[in-house]
Length: 143
Ligand code: HEM
Image (cartoon, rainbow, N blue to C red; front, side, top):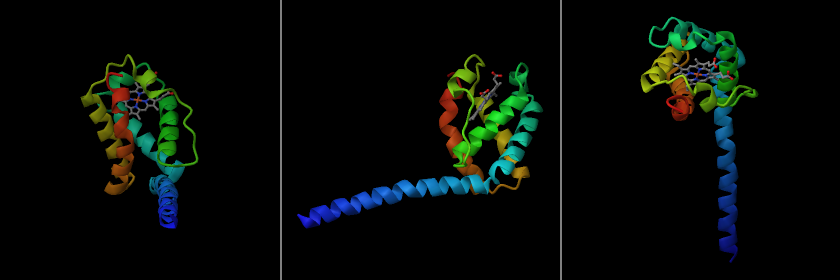
């Protein structure tokens, strides 16, 4: 019996340890992106790219780009484990009616990648952020 109990305790310890590690990894992503200041630079450049991108710039014609940037900074900061709370709208709600396609999604991702290149964000760190954004695709494209 003690052996079973030990095994259960070991399992519990693993669960606690595994539970702690992802939090650390997320915090490191926020730091690797340059914290709030770095993320603000990335989002500024990303929006400049979007508004110059003939493929998707028209979708922002009736939008307040400054507000969207503010919300994106909060969202990226929260997603990457920073001490920031996203106060924006639900992703599905906000993109409903924009009639976006996969090609629009990919164009926006490219504009983000270009922004991160300019900020000298490593390929590894870029991919960690993109991996967090990828699951949002169904909420953005034909939500
Ligand atoms: C992972 C991908 C995306 C993320 C994380 C994202 C995130 C956001 C956020 C945080 C907002 C602001 C929400 C608010 O106002 O409270 C927003 C708004 C907006 N997004 Fe996205 N977005 C994504 C993809 C796209 C794509 C692919 C397009 C078009 C090509 C797009 C077009 C827009 C537009 C036009 C608005 C403003 C809507 C309005 O003025 O009501 N988004 N997005």
